[in-house]
Amino acid sequence: MKEILNFYINLAEEKLNTLNKYKEKLTVIYGFPLKKEYFLENDIEFEELMDAIVYKFNKLQSIMGEKIFKLVLEYAGMEAREKSFLEILSLLEKEKILDMRKWREVRNLRNSFSHIYPNEADEMIENANLLIENISYLQEVFQKLKQFKEKTDEAYSK
Image (cartoon, rainbow, N blue to C red; front, top):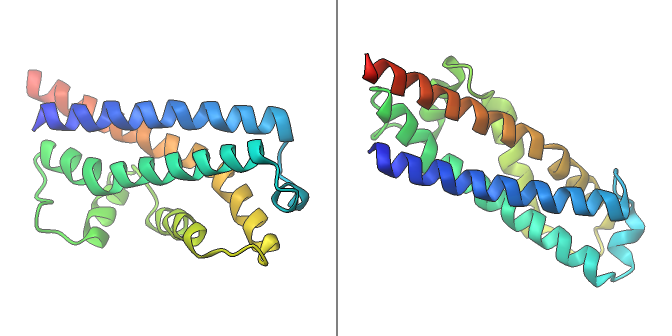
């Protein structure tokens, strides 16, 4: 189990590092918060950067939510295999790794990008800015997951 958990932690870290590079490039070129005009100008570089950020954000959140959450709890000796996703979030909240409400908001934000259409530029820019702001939240949760795993490693080594 430890090897699988380490694999997903390394994969998530790789996605997070790439996501932060894209975010930095986007904010250097276009500034932050992003402006509505960028979504209306058909700037290919802007669209490519935003697509890359949304994709990496989605992948990172999926790896964390679908793989690491259960694995890290199981690794720590907690029964998580048969628990619902909300029960998993509740356990993680008790361990002060995340806030359930915030995680659901970020997940809904992620899902909103698959349902936005070109005539909804105001909603698109608002969601894009929120997504970029929440990269730091994903990073915070990821760091807490790693720390939780490391504490478990220490407990096993005693």
